[in-house]
Image 1 (tube, helix red, strand yellow):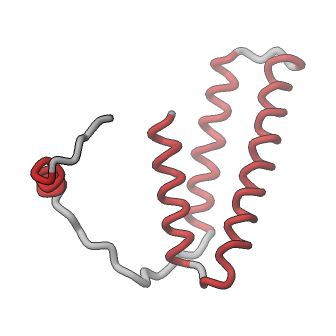
Image 2 (cartoon, rainbow, N blue to C red; image 1 turned 180 degrees about the vertical axis):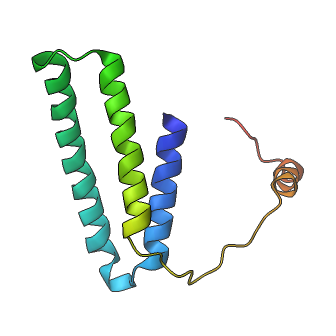
Length: 110
């Protein structure tokens, strides 16, 4: 979970900063945070209702959640516009990056 969360946060913030105009960035990042918080509250309420009120099994709730996630992802991919690349990201060879880190003496783990 931690890897997924940190990957999501890094990409979300990085892409937002690349795509947005500087004067609109703070307000838009605030709106993204507010929408995520509202979605989390709604999600927790629905999960609580499924387990405590309706008494649905864990495997069924898990399958419904996964299916809805896939449907939402495909819908967003199909319905929302693709943003043009303003600043191209250079392609880096992962082995050369690791070699550079090792040669610089940067510890990989704390």
